[in-house]
Length: 210
Image 1 (tube, one colour):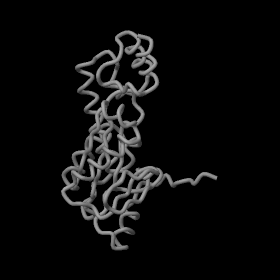
Image 2 (cartoon, rainbow, N blue to C red):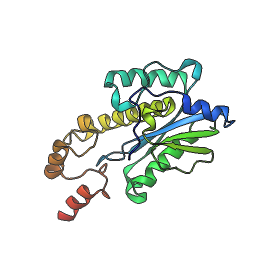
Image 3 (cartoon, rainbow, N blue to C red):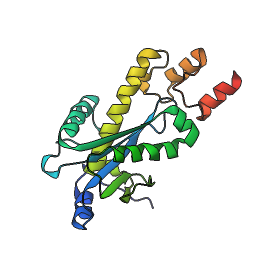
């Protein structure tokens, strides 16, 4: 039977347990953009200051666009934040899982303080030099992971909105590169851009037909 998790907001409990166990500073790591047909994959690593955690942090998918923007700024002001970005060429070369792990490693490396431990959303470990603990649905359980989810999503959303200005036929300002009907229609009419993931089946199939 699948384990169920509470709908309550994330807490600092997992971080505190690692700190109490002598693991030292703890970062949360999450990513945005594993599933889209276009654009980079982005990961963030966040070490929160327990004495000044911004109010309202939660899984980025559960809060409004406006609230994400506010929290993005608040987290940057109060926390140690690293962001890793891996572009489509590396996604196609490495595969999306390995590209995601690389983005996570880059994010952790960009922290000002090297973490002694990392809480990572999901089940996969990206190969960090510090102690790693995975948490399924970690963005709903750990404040640090939830903070990382906000940083990663806002960063990637803004990148896709900028790309949409240069490539206006795919609806990226709305769908952020996911395979919506508007995105598919743009592909069928205008073909793929340099920012499409050629290793993803819908794009690969389209290229094979050309």
